[in-house]
Length: 317
Image (tube, rainbow, N blue to C red; front, side, top):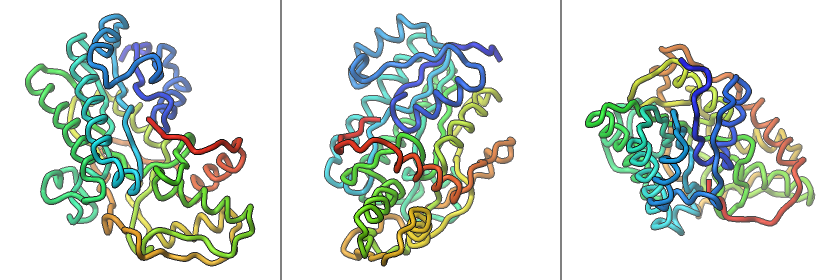
């Protein structure tokens, strides 16, 4: 393929978007186009159409999204479904109108039913009820991948969807009101060590099982699908192994040097009992994750511990 396509990374300031910029710049793609929320509001249809008409984009990496954990999803369901639907519909439609034939849409493993066969194959989509705590977000993401499918079928575009498992890594959101479980644990462990606390509280029972993927591996998978010219479809992206939240918390505590007691707050929701993705479809094409969980947690914790301390702020990926 052309080694210098003009690539729009939507959401470049977020965890996924910034990883995409690092990955593509490091592998010889100099023409990356980015716009912050202050310069381009992706929920504004007119602004998005004007941007695409002016910029002559070849490939879109649609990583922009409103994201958050169980608490944020529970408190702001309308925000999560509206903003994600608006971003997806505006960007996908404007890309098509501007003649962009290649796009990568990023979904989430939460699109799959709460109770389905493990590991979860792409074919499990829409086979049962969703997890209630993040249903609005999941519905928006399902709509985005179905929009890609519909445009491919009607207009001949080549828009594909990547469904990553739980992500972590540089530029994650550590605000406890909106973060996911791993960054929340990293922050709690850091603060427990600094304050010499005797306990560290973990939401739920600790029994649910989760799979975690370093965001740099997702960026690698994205470059893989772009360079291998995959035409359409949905692809799970993960490592193919999981662990309990209790085991995860113990791992983070060990990395942080926390020697106190882990306390599990059973009054808080567990969410989906298990989410392990079947990653055989992408693996069959030759892509595999390279960053092990222990290695990834160590590097991510070190980055968090070294960063300047700033007040919590809302995240708009």
